[in-house]
Length: 59
Figure 1 (tube, one colour):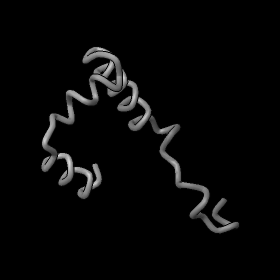
Figure 2: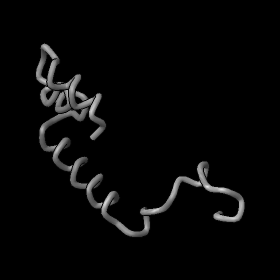
Figure 3: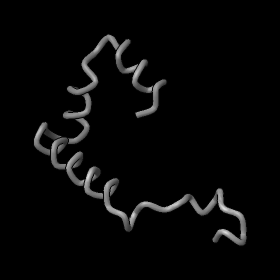
């Protein structure tokens, strides 16, 4: 996680986890979303460079 984001969340006057559950619809939805995110983030098929930052020959 971005260090700036982590610092801001730690300084919040509200519970960021509660807001996350509200936005996701429920704690179970948050858990499921995070599970899917982890699957994608750890899948080698999704581990590639951002093409916007590659030179023409690297693409």
